[in-house]
Amino acid sequence: MILNMEVNHTDIQVELLPSSSSEALEELLKDGPMTLPMKDYAHMEKFGDLGVRLPRNDHHITTKAGDVILSEGNLLVIYYAPNTWNFTRLGRVVNMPEKELKKVLGKGNITATLTLVT
Image (cartoon, rainbow, N blue to C red; front, side, top):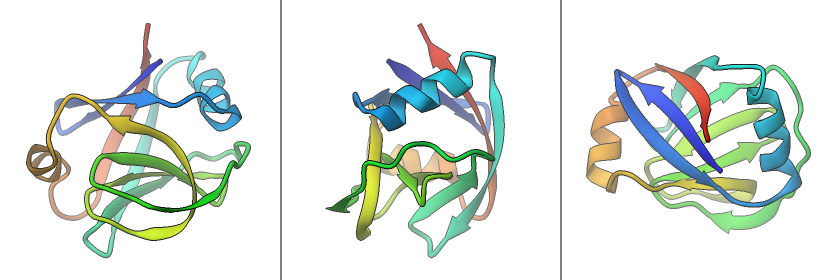
């Protein structure tokens, strides 16, 4: 399944990995698009509160630019720099390289509209 994140009039496509976490996110988005304010943290990620808790499948991982993860069960995070911690990997950006992703995400806070691509 593909998750589309529209940010600054640009579509960021994320291939979701199979897990109970991704399935719960898909169920959440079946009712329609979700607009998510996302804050910048440490010039390496943007994160936004989903407003609900999803199942966690945490593993100790090191993220790469383009990784989309679930943190603490309720935060959707898109990385544009590495970080190591216990996270649930949801998927990976598949339609743009790291440099373009950083440009699209820009500096500071963003708003992302999440939809499922069928």
